[in-house]
Length: 302
Ligand code: EPU
Image (cartoon, rainbow, N blue to C red):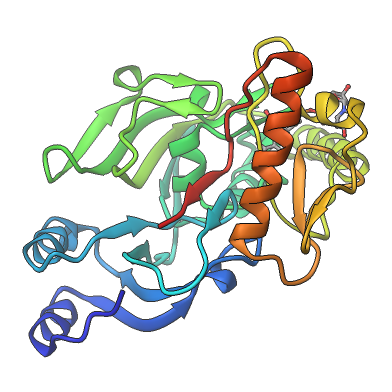
């Protein structure tokens, strides 16, 4: 989708929004898959309500992009523009045990920064790629830890009220890879309350998690992490592996040889290839186990 009306382009500039026409989303996603559209980079949170009113008034559909690390985007010219926050400097400010973090901050860098200041709790999430806003929206978790456990307060753009709102941690429900945020809410910033721990102790926790991750996940390859959520009491990866599906391919979309719930882009996979592979694996699991696997990866398909 292209914004070509000069009046809209001029208004975007007034709102401190940087318009990047014809951006290839394949370059902004960890899977390296995705078509082309206009990217709108937002420098000021406060401009969001006006920006969204402008887009709505001109019938320009939109989607919010975080770090693009848990996302499968459709091929070709995309029928919506993409909005993304520009990361401010600094993106983390500490106040005792509270970390004030911008939604566009990199999750791993934020955890490392807090660790250096003797604040821990999120060691398990160190290798999870993406932004803090994206991690929050999904309640990202690993090795028994999840970001939701540490949330004191969230500032977000609420699609329902069309306003920027502040929610307290206890007003939000954080479940396994799911939150009470609406799909079109945008996470702007968060206050995390982190336990005090000596840097050396946090570092040891990080080292152990990194080792486990390196030995079980295809880290050097293009992927979106786990494709399916684990069904209650079971592991989707183990179920897929037990069916002998590692290496199963559609074009360059391939079930990882290392972890069967990671599907990798081994070259120039299209979204169509990846979606066909996902549907095929889901069907085989359904037939064998009678379980319908739910996507963990977010799919933006036209
Ligand atoms: N397993 C296999 N074959 C495989 C993969 C796994 O037999 O190909 C077995 C493992 O040996 C293990 C069990 O299945 O006994 C569970 O595997 P693992 O420890 O890798 O955990 P997982 O349930 O597959 C979850 C999260 C990961 C997270 C890890 C570590 C989900 C869907 N996945 O994976 O998160 O990194 O635990 O905590 O919840 C993600 O969210 O994208 C993600 C990768």
